[in-house]
Amino acid sequence: MTTPHPAPPPGLPADLVALGARAGARGGRVAVASFGRPAEEALAAVDGAAAVPLAGFAVHAVTGADARAFLHRMLSQDVRGIAPGDGRPATFLDVRGRVQGDPVVCATATGFLLAEEPAAAARAVPGLERYVIADDVGFADVGAAHDVVVLLGAAAPAVAAAAGPALRAAGAAVASLGWRRGEASMVVAPAAARAFAALVAAGAVPAGEDALDAARVAALAPWFGAELDDRVLPTEAVHDAAVSFTKGCYLGQEPVVMARHRGRPPTTLVRLVVDGDAVPPRDAALAHGDRRAGRVTTAAAAAGRVRALALVRTDLARAGVAFALEDGRAAVVEAVAT
Image 1: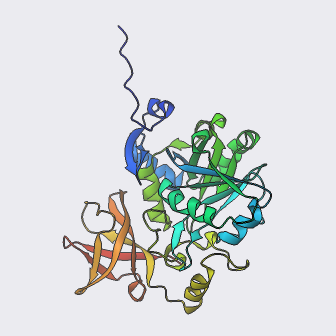
Image 2: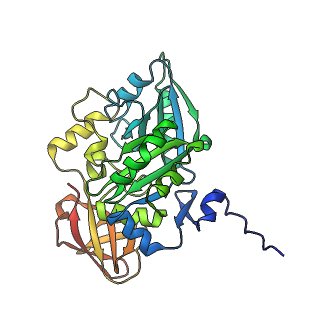
């Protein structure tokens, strides 16, 4: 008698489950937390090459004769220079300069794709649509027809080069994420291109979003729903690769430029080393003396230590400064995002 295979968790594709994918929650979507080898996955994400499928990620097509000009004047990124098959990170801001979304903008032969967390898309896409007045621009949800994979690690460029010709021939776009430290890119591809399988065949280790989180902490790399949301100005957490300071005006530009030139955003992104082996939850409060001084945004255990990203008061964002968690444990600044 043949033993039936277990049904895949809701939201996880069967081909990922067949490779050992284990489900976890990420921002309201069912994600691949790991493939059952967390230590190997975390190591590959930094020192090797790891392919992380972003199950349930949002993808929207932007088409029309005015699509490029419209996105260029609405987003923080210089969209004019993105060639078909390439992409760049960006942010969509409100008039106060607060982050509403952080789409990766990919150019295709027929327009553009915006890839981001569903929670970001729920704000950014309707927000963009409100500014379409006389423009020939249309938006369509094409997430079901596309796969999104993050490729990261020191060997990621070699894997991307090996898999690149086949992926591009299938209509994939590859965008460097511009992390402050480490190599990371996002592949947005038609589902038929089987981008994840192509990257694994080229030498990448299948990895889940737990490994992605650990790599982000190591690289001081922000993510929507963690470091980025509508409480945050880009100058507090967004890496410079997502914001052009040489292009013309865009929505929310003035507060961003003012904060940059003043050099004193309210908070600054830092990496902490946390005492003990318990991982603090997102938004855990940090105190300095008897005053609240910041909050944890992402925490991960890797290589025997707990490290975390946090947004802390800018005047305290210095290596060696110690904060206290609510449970009394110390969290010491190891590095500052610059």
